[in-house]
Amino acid sequence: MEGLDRAALEQVSEYFKSLAEPTRLCLINALRDGEMSVSDLAEAVESTPANVSKHLSLLASTGFVERRTQGTSVLYRIADSDIYALCDLVCGHIAKRIAAKVMSRQ
Image 1 (cartoon, rainbow, N blue to C red):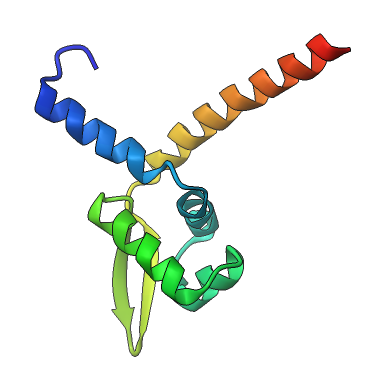
Image 2 (image 1 turned 60 degrees about the vertical axis):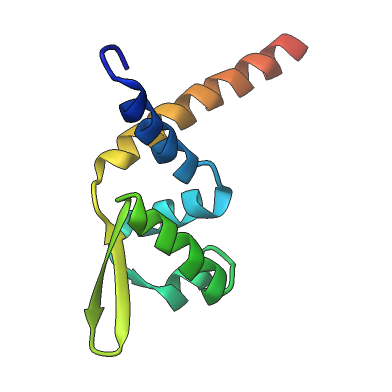
C-alpha cells in the first residue's frame, strides 16, 4: 500500500469489498476448476440463478470473472487466477487463528 494515493486506495477497498460476501467467495471457489454456466454455479453454491447472476455481475465489474457466450449459454471463468493465492493466504491465516483459539481452550 505504500506509495498509493487516496484514489488508488479506494480502488483497493472496492476490490476487497467484492470479496466480502460468502456467496461471491463460493462462486470464486467453484470456478477454480474452470468455466461454468450460471445454472451450474447456482447448483454448486446452493443458490438461485438470479442471485448468482447478481453476484457474477459484481464480480465481472471488478475484474474477478470474465464471461463468454457459447450458443445460448453464458459461461463464466476466473479472469486472474492470482485471486486464489490471495484467498489461500487469507484462509491459511484464519485457519491458524482458529487453531490457536482451540489450543488455548485446552
